[in-house]
Length: 388
Ligand code: V47
Image (cartoon, rainbow, N blue to C red; front, side, top):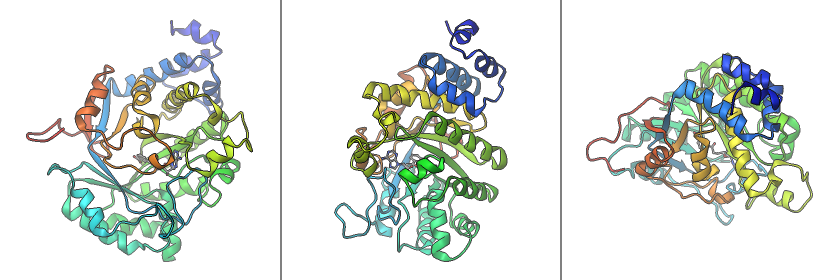
């Protein structure tokens, strides 16, 4: 069914030929794929590209997310996690001991990844995090330490009155191996102005990611979708990441972040009818599920130089994440243990998954589980005495 005539009839003949020949697609072709009514045709092309690169291998990681605080100086309109200060209901800031206790809560089988994020805190300074990271690495030397988005790196540089490069060097020296992919949102300036007017620009996101890569730090990258962005905004966002990757090469994994529409200003504005009703966010639940698969598929097809596409089960939902494995995704992320950013905005997935559950999710849809660390180094399957 998914042969050349089928694609030609859909107006995708040239895209089909390019994917079969391993040629790069243009931003306009990405937009065409977002608009194509046949989601299965788009998914089959993405699955082809995924199998070419990874076969049926599907990655997961034994990891722990640690949110040190939700106090943040920015006012991103999509965020339900942030608070202005410690006095607001729901605000929290962990002390060093509480962070270390979470990293140690691993049944004696150290996490392969420790993922630390919290937003742009008004008073916690870079030196506090350097000390924290040194302690984390002393306690769990084998865990890959992944922390912050490039927005926090920019925030520290302003706090300290130094360059982002100097911040990154200090953090690297303290044990940081990579940055998380968050904070990219949508690069299109008009959309950014509507959803996160105080956040660094898309150009700065890419510039600081490039600085990190040049220093030997890896990073992930992302796109927040399903709110007020257009198909063109999505395609251009993905191609801007691809262009940066051509230059600096350090993006390991792309994470499409499906907008969670509870308890945040943007969701309220959309449901109150003040904004554009044609936005993807206004799709029914079923259509939104298909849209999530489509974003995974188009990302796989446009991002020919970023090795991994993550089906982040927390934001996609477990079942959609499973389906995403047949639409181009090759990674499910991990055990997580504790998640606040998505859950405070309405994500209804569990807080944690065991390793056995992740493996069952993968084998249950015909793929092969591969245990990994944050940098996608392959790790052995369950070791002796290790709990699932
Ligand atoms: O930076 C905030 C986004 C990000 C909402 O690097 C929202 O491996 C959806 O970056 N709906 C944090 N998204 C999560 C993140 C992440 C998660 C898992 C793995 C990795 C990785 C990175 O979540 C934020 C922001 O872009 N976000 N609010 C919301 N309402």
